Length: 131
Image (cartoon, rainbow, N blue to C red):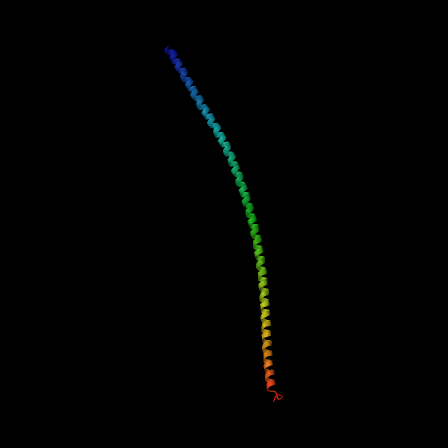
């Protein structure tokens, strides 16, 4: 009976070892499956992130080109407006000088006319006819 008991005990121990091994094997297989799924999901997420980064870089480059183009257009427009303003200032300065010359000429004419009028008035008062 002892030998049967020992054999049963040995068989039981072997069965337990086999079950324990199978359990660990199943756990390892499950862990590997989870890791593979996780790696596949991580690769998918990484690819998505790389695609998003690429799109963001393209958008950034396009915005930079547009900004540069608009900045150049704005600078050209400002330059054109400055030239027009300078032209208007020159024309205005020319008109101012012309107006000053005209005003000076008119002032001189008025002064001469007043002097002539004074002389005529004086001559009228002191002329031999009035005496």
